Image (tube, rainbow, N blue to C red; front, top):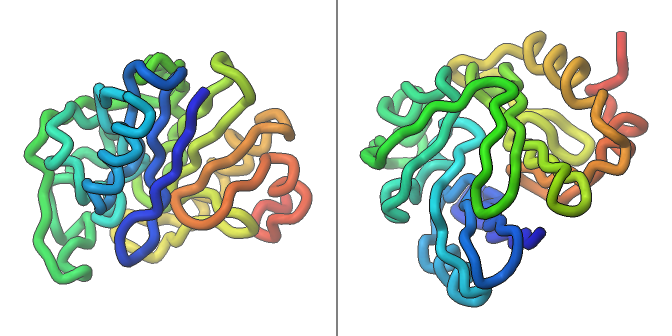
Length: 208
């Protein structure tokens, strides 16, 4: 599996270009900004993007949804975030942004194939109502794209519109800690980690 990270925007979002191999189709996860940088990665690897996946509906993760001209996948509960600036927080960043691209809804445990890579949707409410992670285990090493739900040594904020800390903690403990320890975690901000490392060291994930 090919995974290229592009750090985009003033909030330094990790946008990921993912494909089974160079020279084929790709999926772009969380294209928050810097369309030039994203296209540069696609061109370097001779990739043609076929869709966008938003791990949630905040503006720093959806800012280039329209510019790519592709279908956009998002969990059904975050669909409304893509249309309402007061929910996606774009007004806080000095803009008023809404997505006009074609929207396709995702559900928990849905399996989709994008960029030649099979991904299972894991619904992780708490940062937003429709926050998701994407789990890949059939195209090489086990990989989890965790969005803003799980970071290295931390978890996502729950004090923004639609957030709920108890839901986030429960969903992480019940859905994420059960994954194999060698699963590589690629978060929405910051550096990568593993499930094993977070199970052992993340202070927020210690079971009560």
